[in-house]
Amino acid sequence: MASPPPASTQHAAPPSVAPYHPPPSYPPPAGSRLAVTDGKAAASLVWAILGLVFALPLGLPGMIAGPIAYFLGKGARERIAESNGQLTGRSAANAGRIIGIIATAVGAVVTLVWLVVIFNALNDVPAETGF
Image 1: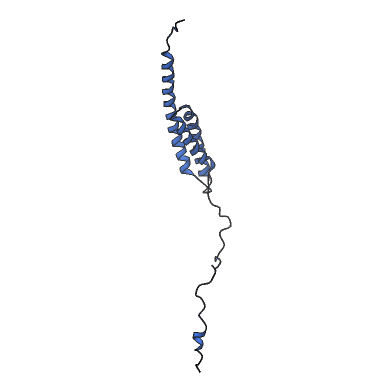
Image 2 (image 1 turned 90 degrees about the vertical axis):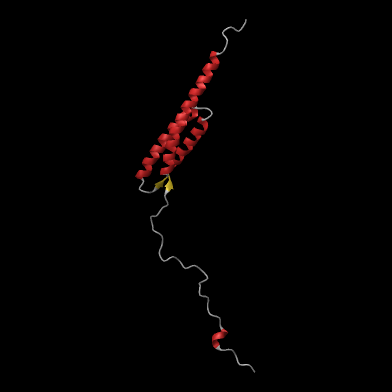
């Protein structure tokens, strides 16, 4: 008869890795919150983009939305600076301010062009209609 195998080969060695992840060694900090983007900064960027898009064909919407975007961005920068890192969005606020200025300028130029075109068309109407 054959002799039984030695004891060391009868049982497989336990796996070297646990079948689950061990819990963290310490809990997360109690008061940690993720920084949130300031709503005014996002609104500033949205108003600026809309103002620029509508300023190109029409003019007047850029002259209205541009200053709104500028002042929203200005207020957002102040709120972000005072929040001690709780609010983010400084770059969005700056972009909103800059694009707001551009939208205002483009809106003014396009509005001026439209006024020249309209007044020129009104000036070319003949005085006598032939009645």
